[in-house]
Length: 311
Image (tube, rainbow, N blue to C red):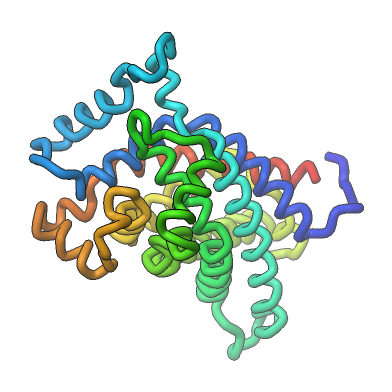
């Protein structure tokens, strides 16, 4: 593999993250749309459909319903509604996250020493957890406006569908700049998902590398094979996603247009969703999320690791 030495380690993280986020978003966008619709169903007006099959059926019918304002448009194109903002948001978010995570890890490593044989050094899993949390907070604060716009565009129906820039102008005109911060609280709280993910993923990677190379520094720099990446990614993603999924559901609903004018707080929304369907309602769409998130993250990290190896 060529070594493009003109790129710094942080620049490699940015390029790898941008590439991985862009490619993955295009491949799995329809599943992302279905997941979002299922999350918003928790606060939709009217009678809730019974069972998971009823929810999926209602969501798919709503997405694929012919649009009278778009004569001649093929129904399958509805599955790619909001693709542009999704690609933009995920590309920027992954680039920022990987770069921030690398910077945070390096900073913590310098603060702790190398951690080898030093009883005062922070254990590696805790270092990864802390670095993931710091990177998550930074990324959430910077990209939250993109996720608000994504939710509005992908959730809009009929004549309320507007292009990206018109959606942004309408949101700011109607709700002010605060509208772009909707869902920020659960988003920041939800960074624990990324922190838990990277704690699991990097811990598994380091243990694997040490088994292969006897703990040598050269082995620690080796790139994992695709099979290792897929296995460790899948395990880490299932644990991290399931642990904080209700926060993700609450965030999506707070960012939606249907709740924008209701003065909802995170606490009142959680109470409302719980009253309508109990604990199960707080996990509405988790199955779809895992079906989408696990393969998506596997693709993302395979591309990310491959790009890092190439660069």
